[in-house]
Length: 111
Length: 121
Image (cartoon, rainbow over all chains, first blue to last red; front, side):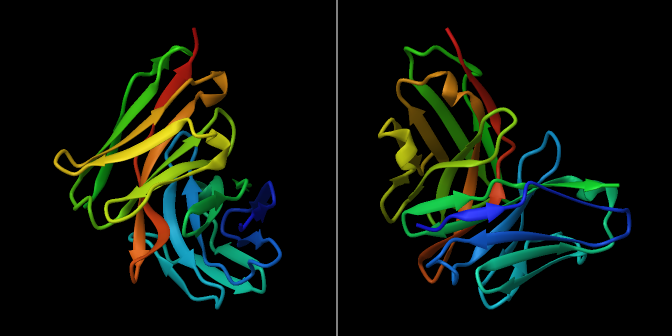
């Protein structure tokens, strides 16, 4: 079964860029993932689906500042022009026919 | 625009069954998978299980067969029952819609606002 690993925290100044990483375990490097954002005190929100090819499909209303990319077993979420409302925990998610898994989440702090 | 609303008792005794309902509005219930996810206080997201009108239901093995997820298409509701709850089941419980791609299960694209459940005597 696929397992996802995320770094626990990241930070960036207002207006800068930050790149988050979600890594799939050995043998599952081709899996697609999804990125979700959870702002403080709120439910998670779907951001995008990201394929192993690097192609991504964003949810409705997700700002252009959010983009995705892939390299091998790594899946990335890049937030450009960081805004205060981007301060949140970001989770990656993957799935199989009878299973799904979340990464531990990366807390993004806007300095 | 599809919306999901979780409901259920906020306090559950360890001897009872934890029962929650997710009501779906704005879309059909039969074209998607439906999942339950929980988040213990201060912790990350944990998939509980998912179900599909045209297929089977799958659960996280960590539940040790305590969970049941079902659909009521007439009421457009997804339910979760968790037997023999303990304090470790205290969490915010979310329901979510899962899209399909060419009939295969895919990602979660809509989340409910969540409901807080405390297990305590």
